Length: 129
Image (cartoon, rainbow, N blue to C red):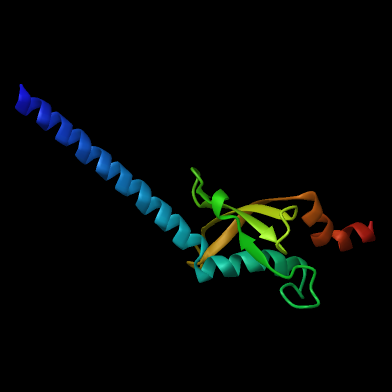
């Protein structure tokens, strides 16, 4: 009886270790994707498409950083990220980074933009209306 109990507990412990290891590997993989050079290019492309002078002293968008607490794997594929613009927590862009099947890099898909960031990124479009 004692050997059976030890065998069951050992099996449960091994399964728990394997699951924990898989979770840690997934977290590492997600972090390596969002901090890769290809992902940085895809993120900067979002802002450069709206403002040619982005990330320069003349641009409206000076900098960005990822909200590390909101990086998570998307069940439909890719990684969901939250981007804080100009170090202002009221200027947030949420998007998904996924593998681009055509060029092997990464691309962004779908976006939601905070109202304050919307004012900065799309102010020229609103002036034309």
